[in-house]
Image (cartoon, rainbow, N blue to C red; front, side, top):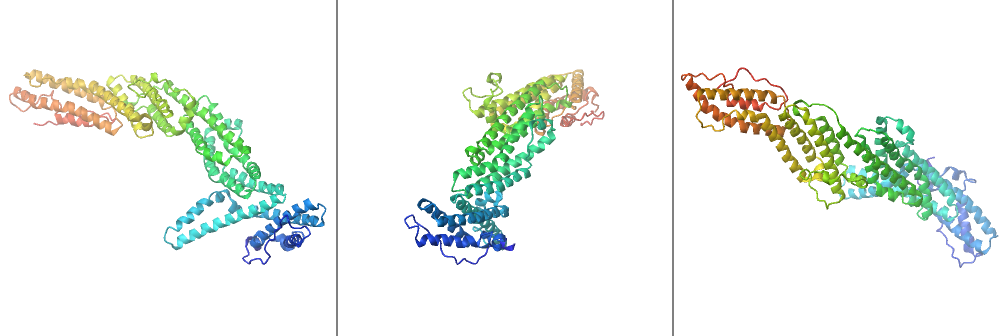
Length: 615
């Protein structure tokens, strides 16, 4: 058996091939020589008369003799063609015909052995990467040689040469059998072996036939596992499995376009139809549900992206008319996925509009709806390249419904990217309108504005740090940053304006001790009341939190410090010059500043009864 796997390096001593021209006489020595020369090598490899021929492979035993065998058979066929036209009843024609039958049996056996024994070298991945192997081999020559690189380089050369040699042998046999009128036998062997390899490859990629009825009964967790397997299967199929088989088929049957088409179609069609039929089944399952979790949209988008991203390869690999059904199935899946995705997006918008949860977020923080919706929308923006195509067939939102101050886009701009930007702007507007209504759940108007500030800040932050910024543009961000400031200013005015109002506008006006005491008393009560309310408030965004605290501090502390430093002298003097500040002066400027620094942590803090005073 070792002779089946070893190539003899001993050159053959056979005579060079003979050729026959039409002008030569059929009774000439040349004709006799061609037939006898063919008979010599054909009989030597006759499996019915030679035990050696039964257990030995011609192409593995002696490649040079194998090539001579092919040449002799080709010469014999040419001779037979001439004999048929000149003398159909010639004894030499009968002898030649018997020799041809023996030769074809030998070549059928060789063809089968090479296909079945060289699966590693004829593996679609090996075949599809031959060009990359050549590039890799060339790249090694650009670096200094060392033991490791030489080893890797030698391995690459060995694999590439083995694959190339096997493919060349198959083509030689196929061309000889086709030219000799044995195309049917050759094709049958090729289809049987290669189809089993492709079918096994599809099976190993965990692509299985699932009926629509069975899919509808499957849980989403089960379906998602199959979708992930399918996504990997498409990648492998397009890069190696079907691509490699197409390359091999084109190479082996290079001499006949019709045979190439027939073989590749028969080998790949079933597996490809199974592969590209799966998304249509998934889309039908999801669209049949009245309400599906929005997360399913991304699996649909992944599948759409997979087919769309491989569309050029699909058209190239399945370019034959007989494989047009594969292209049609892939297109049907794209259409079904598009319909399901559009349906999911409508459900998503509807869920925002119909959200009736009465969740009141502690301290006016970011609402769960804002978080989940913006997570979804920002992830959708990652698929903007395919969403342009998917949404091109559905009417966009009415631009007149978008406030000019909210999103500025030219009415004349009807580009797909502009239409997509409008759709995203609309989704965010729907969310913000819903959040605006949820702000009414807070009884305190200042907390309502803080709630709006926090939620809009979260929205803008997600836009800034995702693909949404490219879609909506800097102008959208700038407009909404300004809106955040408006909400924030409203909060500060409502929450801390009353505290500031307790201090006199004209700080130079003369005041009696009683008036000063009253002012200090009002300030202390107002500040304590505001602080007690606002300590429960939160601002999750660090930058925004510090900005609001700093703004409040800058407005309140300097005015209070000036009033405190100038008016406390009046209280001391009114007490007979004794150092005894009124009990109504509960806070020093430093106390106010320290308390303000504790704001928006989300923890309700009590003002200490013991307040440190400075002289």
